[in-house]
Length: 132
Image (cartoon, rainbow, N blue to C red; front, side, top):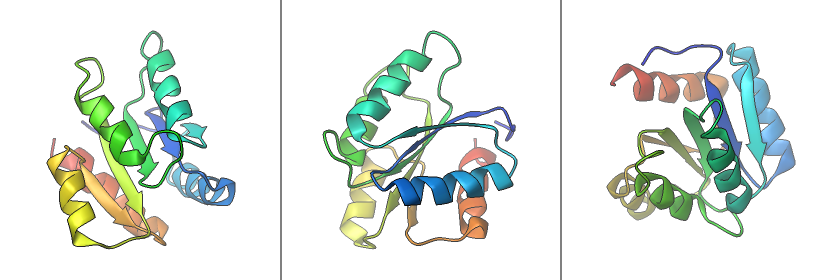
């Protein structure tokens, strides 16, 4: 799948400042359609609601979310035929290899460790979408 500026992206992170920072990175990279969620439950609801109109195509999600963790959200998505092909980038501030291996086993497309630069973000996005 080629990267397109209109791609619907869901950004899920509890920290409003972190969401704002990453959203700015994404808009600076040319992406125009970024939705935000402050917890895993809201993220899931956005995914469900988007299915009838313009579906979410890419999720950037923090591992540690309240209500539904990033890993639980990933599992829900991969278990659902409608959503299982959505590209998923997991963010974490913990570089624990076991967590990363667990996310890979659950079908994450890539993992990014916080803090990260816009350059690192675009490299991760390129890896996800250019191997499909």
